[in-house]
Length: 113
Image 1 (cartoon, rainbow, N blue to C red):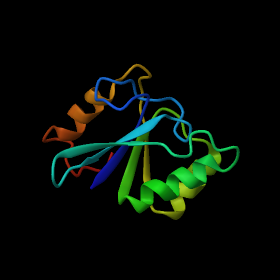
Image 2: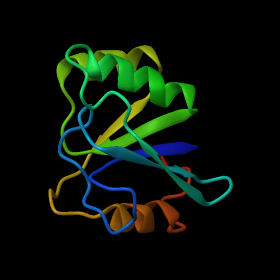
Image 3: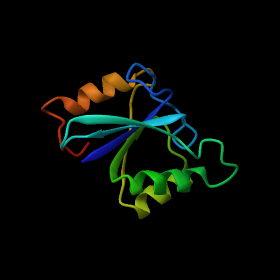
């Protein structure tokens, strides 16, 4: 399963972003290969429909789950169309590395959150 993490930067030490559609980039973790790739968010400055276009962008990369702090109503609807699961973190001070650690631990691989 591929999981996207909304991120404030292009490295694991970056903070998880509180703005899903407006975050600067995404860390995409593939639990089959145990690899992480970072992608800039090409729609972070979009005037309209950022949630919908970002959701389509991530769906095109094979993402099945997105982790972040906040998801707007339009983004929630768009991810539902693509069958993407949303995970809202309970803490607002986590880094991408911390979330990756949770995903890479044996108890969370392929687990539905």
